[in-house]
Amino acid sequence: MSRTSKSIMYFSFYMEITGIVMIIFPQIVLKILSIDLRADVVVRFLGMVDVFMGYYYFRAGIGGEKLRNFYQLTLHTRFAALILLVLFIVVWNVSPIVILFGLIDTGGAVWTIVSMQLDKNKKIKTDTAESEK
Image 1 (spheres, rainbow, N blue to C red):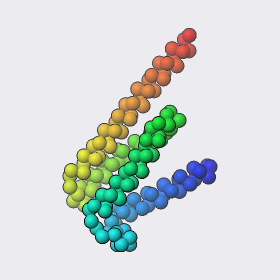
Image 2 (image 1 turned 120 degrees about the horizontal axis):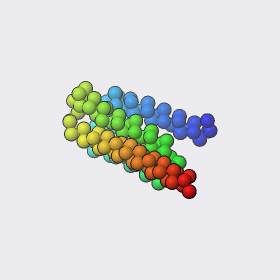
Image 3 (image 1 turned 90 degrees about the horizontal axis):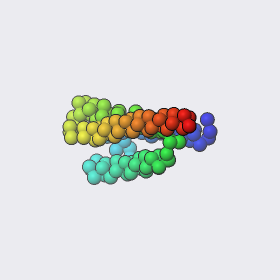
Image 4 (image 1 turned 90 degrees about the vertical axis):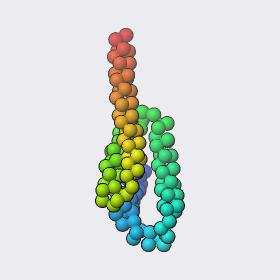
């Protein structure tokens, strides 16, 4: 594994651990960071994270087929979002309206799966037609 790959992998550990801690123990995190729990602060922080993630997705989207593995990996988290949001509703009494975010993520994941399959079928037909020449 390259040093660059390791740096990305190790950073992912940090992100996963902090994300899990923020989900399970939000009050402790807010207290440690001396953040007054106001909805606007939380929404702005999550908005920042969303913008950064959107940047990653955008760059991957224009990266073409060389990032196909990334496209496949996004399916795991986009389907997991719906499951976790249902858990938030059931366990932590979060407003059911948040399920809309999970449905959008799931819809996007299904769109990606269908697109990948269509691209694969097109490539097979193109390769077959070229080999018959």
